[in-house]
Structures are given as C-alpha cells and as structure tokens.
Length: 171
Image 1 (tube, rainbow, N blue to C red):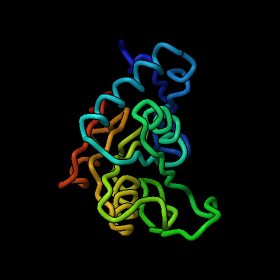
Image 2: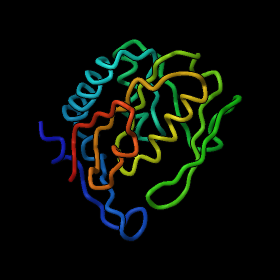
Image 3: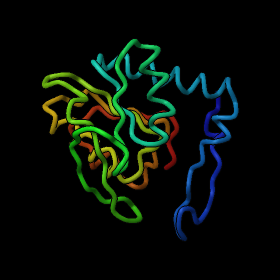
C-alpha cells in the first residue's frame, strides 16, 4: 500500500518556510491506518520492549493501538502541564522553536525497555528528548519507530546509538 499517497503536503504550516506532512488523509482511510499500525507493530515487536512510549500527540495515534495489539503498557510523553502526578521534564529545540516534554516519574521501572513511537522524524530533537526522559527514569530505549522520516533534516544522525526505524521516507 502506498502510504505516501495519503500524506498531504501543507506549505507554510505552522509557520512560513515549514512544509508540514499531514497524516489526516491517512487517518481517514481505515485500510491505510490499519496497514500503518501493522507495519509499526511488527517493528516494535521485533525490538522486544516492555512498554510503548508515544509522543504527544500524533505518537498517541499510533502508539496506543500498537501497545494494545502487543499487550504492552502505553506510556504517554506529554507537552507541559498535561500530566497530573509527579513527573520528569526536559526542554529541547525543534526545527522552529523550543519546547518541553514530560513523563510521569513512575511511568517505567529501572531496566525496562521502551520503544518510542511518533508519526514523524525531522531533526530528531523531540525523539532525543523523549529518549532522555526514559533514560532519566532508569529505563532503556529499545528503539524508535516513526511512520514518516524527513531524511534531509538529518534526524537519524542525531539519534546515533538508537535503533531507528521508519516507513515513509522523504529525501
């Protein structure tokens, strides 16, 4: 199935000069969404994690069905101010600004293996921040799985040492 055909290009979003890859057409197609979740599930299963961590918000769309299919806990990695209990936080740079991610302090146990899922790998800043949160809890990053990779932005290079997998690559 050609998933790339169901990803819409939106120029100048969220700000001028950014070409946004919109997955909502893919989400509207049940067969395509099921196929994408199946690809991600197979990659995650191969990494043998103890948990699935999804990055807000589109990482939730793929991470929760993958976790459910594999019978694994889902760990939300959230934007600031969204988690109600004790949490760990990291600040990081995006391709168009700065941000912060949070994880509950009790989300993972020392030595557990978590796979990070998100919809898109760009510069790698968000994924690196998610990995840092998991590692701050004493857990290990078993790998990172993305539906889309923007290879020209070099995110994979910033994630050396991690097993990084993607399915739709834009050069």
